[in-house]
Image (cartoon, rainbow, N blue to C red; front, side, top):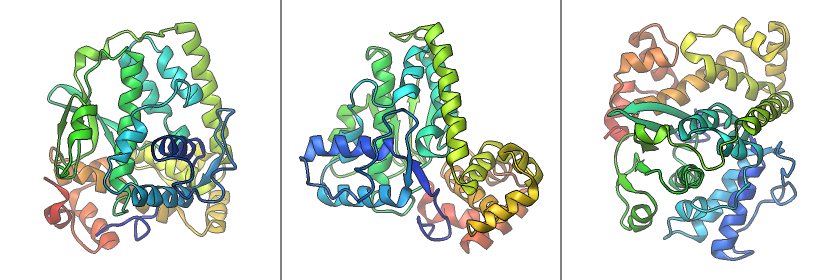
Length: 342
């Protein structure tokens, strides 16, 4: 089984704002001091909107304690389903000032790496509807489901708020229906379980819906601000994190080390040296990104193995199968048959 912390390593940092939002919401629900906040998370606030980066292991430790203290609650839905306006700074206001809901979603997907370090939301078409898929990087962790719930609830709450509640949000979850599904049924407009992916479904007629705070001038200014903040985050991030991001964005094109070095803004030799200083290599990171995305794609039953191979940068299914088995000790088909596909 692929588990966080085993063969599939996680990104090393995350924007400090994300755990800060979680801490504030959980303490509002459970009470101050109930959850043990790891040292190093209370001392950062990201109030300038740039969001200092913190070790992702601290975020994992926080989530572990959250689910331990609220084992019988849909704590992710409760925590993510409500937050004060402006919580997510410039990125949130960029979405709010977009002309339509569809434009806001597009900008959110393009720039959400500001918060999570790497892009983990993607889109697909499901029965003519827009499916926004969340690819968790915490597979196998005890808090994985709660973190997925939190991320989807935050997204749904934002999209509802920018449209004055006029958009209907349908939720898909990869896991089986829980014994107490009521919080999900109450929060989302409809819920489907065992879909092979986690995401929200939006009918196309809502994408053209005007946002209540549409402001083209402000939107243009904020987009430049967000671009600058994201570029600044790239500079501050580790070389490995920047390479992961570049590989994720260009994986289907089969980027070479020369192309990635150009994206990162260094020579190939400098890139190799810096990665070595961080105890990794271009090949290791390429395998990591391919595996992480392959695991997510294999959960989507509409994609066959050949299509998954293409999406993660392999020339054919045979080459993909060999690589997947080398990294996981099993074939893509076996991985699916073991219950990772409905």
